[in-house]
Image (cartoon, rainbow, N blue to C red; front, side, top):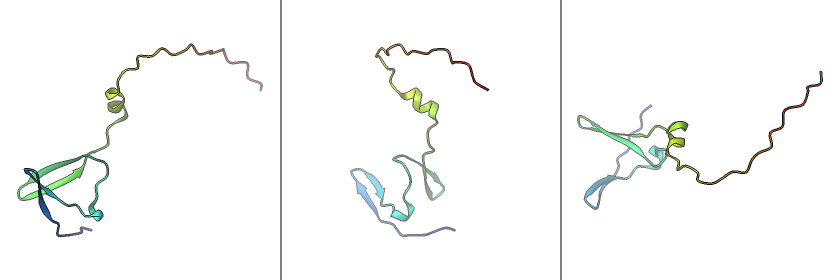
Length: 77
């Protein structure tokens, strides 16, 4: 089911912008925009993978204390 709404275009500095109605709100803070012929298509940016997020984190430069890791005891049956 496709919804249609008329929207306002306006200038933001030297860029043209569009007000996106709440009903068409996209998740997140980033999107992908592409042009196909006369159509302008805006899609939410797919979520980043956990590995990509972890790779972007800064390394930790702190020492961690040793952790006691005793051998497990026998299991009672």
